[in-house]
Amino acid sequence: MNNITTAISALVLSALAALPSAVFAAGPSSGVVYSGDLQFNLGYGEEIAANEADQKLTAEGQTNLLNDGFKLVLPLDSMGTNASTATLDPALMGAMGLSAEFVSADISQNFQPLAVGLSHTSLEANYLGDQFLSLKQWSPHLTGFIGENVSVRTDYTQSQKSLGGRPGRDANVDSLGANISWFINGAKAYFSLGAKYDTEDAVDPEHDFNANTIKLKLAKHFPFMTRSGIIKLGASYEQRLYKNGISELGEPREEGRTRYQAELELPLTQQLQLIVNAEFADHESNFAEAENTKYVTGAELNFSF
Image (tube, rainbow, N blue to C red; front, top):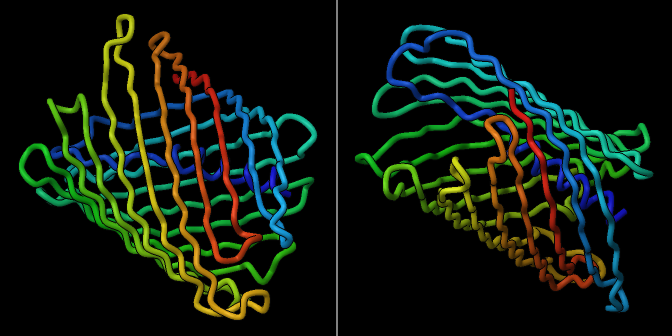
């Protein structure tokens, strides 16, 4: 099951990465914009987790993902309001029998210097034909610029998630987030600092928790052949405190989750792009079964049209 959980996490991250960007044009849009992409992903992951006896169990796996996506941008009025939708349908090749469908939509209105928007996300993941994860999110957001080089975004997200076969883990999640980005040398580089607060209310009170997360991200363009490549570095730390004790501990469960990410985007042609990524995650907990360390590497070919 560790491999399935890791693969589902990868699908969620891929889906969220495919979210359409809100369009904050000052003037009216020039017309309907259609775009799409076809992606083939190769990935390798390893997870080391501790069991009750604190013995190390190792699970590793290789995945191949084929993603097809489509985006549609519609001008709604002359005030710069735009709507966009995207679909992602990854099919996992091999014996794992894992598939997922992802749909998102975002609508925003530019009021200069602020833009107000609302986004919706839906993810359905199945394992061997049975539901593994259902996730639905609604998120109003507010974005604005301070001067020419600083962007600020705040958002509230309400999530509903359901895990097939584990009804006690079904939950509602409320999240508050804020992010500030500094653009350097125009848009050739930027540094981003973000913070988020989550509170999860699960069917089984054992899984209720509050969490605080801080995130750092650095991105920089660089010349590559006749085009521009991008390198992205990220780090995050989440401090999670469960609200109720569990029988094995006799006290509330606490966790610290650290994650480091690196990504390299290389444009091979005008339509073809190679993306190489790596991730390290370490989960520490006073509940031994929840401790684990993950190493994930991957490569992706993305054809856009």
